[in-house]
Length: 118
Image (tube, rainbow, N blue to C red):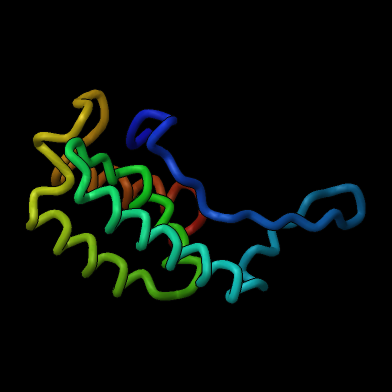
């Protein structure tokens, strides 16, 4: 949705089987989510310095983590800086996916539709 699969990252999901149904209990593990968010931010900082930086997939998963941790406002502030630096396009590796402000709008909608943003 945000970049090629090879450049994608995914937030952790932890499921519990309860009376013949799966229940998402990911938010019960903030330490794991925090560790994952730090790893993604580190990955972003490494990739942005690459010759052909593609950070949209990493940052989408990072924002999902921020919502799981209740720190979405801090996450959006960081993405605003990334946007101002021009790291969300144009100039991204592939133009099949949203870039710049369209990326931000698409990511916000995606996080609402998938239940990260309430």
